[in-house]
Image 1 (cartoon, rainbow, N blue to C red):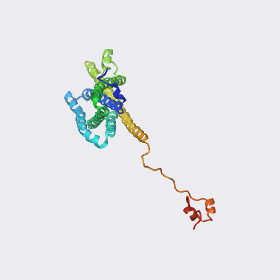
Image 2 (cartoon, rainbow, N blue to C red; image 1 turned 45 degrees about the vertical axis):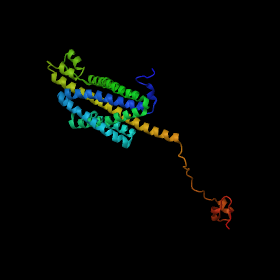
Image 3 (spheres, helix red, strand yellow; image 1 turned 90 degrees about the horizontal axis):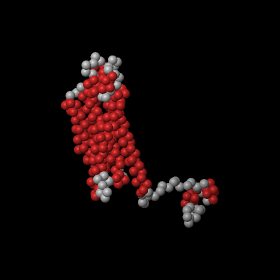
Image 4 (cartoon, rainbow, N blue to C red; image 1 turned 30 degrees about the horizontal axis):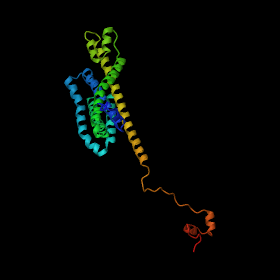
Length: 295
């Protein structure tokens, strides 16, 4: 089409693929892990929907603060540094629940605040890169790329992290003996289904404990995967900065007017000293068009 809604030619511009990948990573993690954490807070920790939503508001509050602070940080440190920091902060923050800090409300709050603030920095810097890389007549196409990253990231995060958590949960669920097969199949679908399957069973307490333990492991694994992805994104961002800096220097060549360093002047050897009548001072004064013997 002459004017496509999503122009693939924009991805050939420097910085656009990485920025689009940053939007995709942030949105997939934000939506996918948010869904898992909402389930974990209610089913495993036993919080009410209101209390669980209040915990997750920490992410939104930190994201709002990060979005407000991002323009000043971009102006002071540049896009590449802010984007790298935006990837590194969620990588460190999400490592806390991956290491077992899910049951501590304080450490979980630190992880939510740090990841929300860092994701806001990464998302703002990626948006700035997308809109800055596109020419003025293709600003709408750049906005379409960003919007596609939002929608695709939300769906991809729900699918990928949800499938990962479901697989890990089913693998780590240890059903107590004596539970009927129908209840086993229902409990293996998820912790909420395990709660429903436990009604009327004598092993209800053991089944619920096993489901909560398996759900905790699944959220930890999902957080570890997200932390690894953000770590990889930060490393790629750092490597991209160094490669881009080297490419620019190579393309520019040596700076004009800069002279190469010369080594120290050669010390006259024995033959030169002998030819000057045994006087090294004469050799030092000698040069082009200068007699080699003292006057």
